[in-house]
Image (cartoon, rainbow, N blue to C red; front, side, top):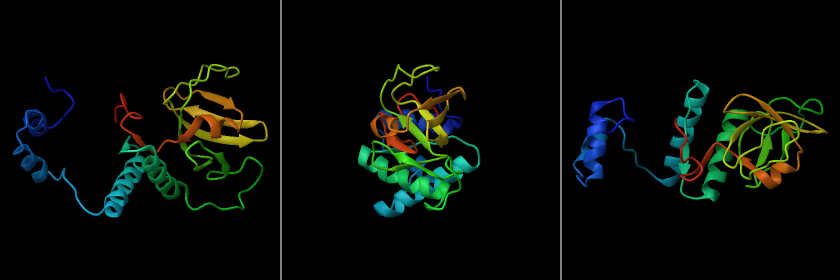
Length: 184
């Protein structure tokens, strides 16, 4: 029994499509669910929709074919949400958008970013372990390290800044494996 769709037409169309009935695509087209264009146009549209969803308080997922594409798309989302990088951020801890360090995807991680942890890390002082594929938000950065907030429960964890380059990447986009089991 199909349970993941609110609209009856979509429940029915998904079953028909799974069974190889390509006429189901007509239903998706009628309901505005199919989009096409150049790669650039499609990436821009996906980023626009993701940013709009996040800014309106909804959850969303940007799923890409490769990790390199995820890094590229995440950087585009980051710039839309945090603005262009400014090197005159106030104070040591910096405000929202202040640079923290590079992630393992090569992107600069900034205060306010959503990141995805990529290595099971059990030696986190004073906190529960950080688990591979866990989503967190960068709350602040000091000379002592980075404070992260878990999306799952809102708890915070403090880690050394250098761990970002070894164990984290921007978490705005990811492959199907990165989002396996995530509900949005």
